[in-house]
Amino acid sequence: MITNLTKEIVERYRLTTLMVTHNMQQAIDLGNRLIMMDKGQIIFEVDENEKKSLTVEKLLAEFQRIRGEQLVSDRAVLS
Image (cartoon, rainbow, N blue to C red; front, side, top):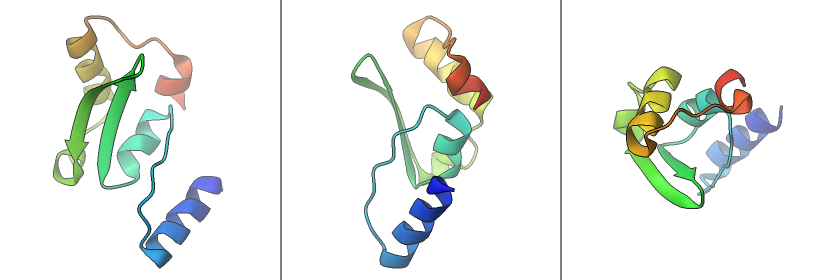
């Protein structure tokens, strides 16, 4: 509900908005850019075109490639 309301307001008023989420699918579905952070550092960034082919599985694989470890948060994977 909050996500839909935010999306509607952003589109209606053409606002620049920063949304923070632990839900990988939501991060892929919303916005025109995705930035992944870990331990306070930006570790991965994609633009709108790259996001079109991104999946949760690919995002998790990218995290593992960069950090050398799996992301094990149920909130991130199952949300």
